[in-house]
Image 1 (cartoon, helix red, strand yellow):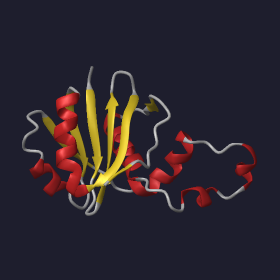
Image 2 (cartoon, one colour):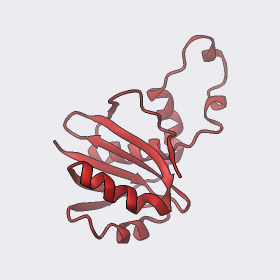
Image 3 (cartoon, rainbow, N blue to C red):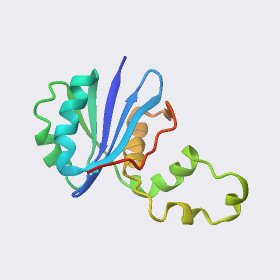
Length: 145
């Protein structure tokens, strides 16, 4: 099984997705403080067999890449331009609006949502050139603080 981690790096918070490429499924999607990313990845790597890590080439990608020196497999830096903007549209593909909520402007539903994990998903999808589905009803707004 070819599991990969995709990261949307940020100064204060980062989005992270764990996915299975062959199955085209997302198994974990979280947002965490960037200072916790290294320890979270160390624990994740001991629990999962991860083939590679894909990091968006944004704000703090260089610093995060340096912190991942313990990961002995492939680390790829990949273009993340407009992923936050695109995450808004992808949010509604993953979580469609139904019923009477359909009459309310879509922007209302994402005003206070953190879309960093969806941005990490978009980085992964762009890299793999495929769309992923959710393994289960994942909450892309899960925060680890």
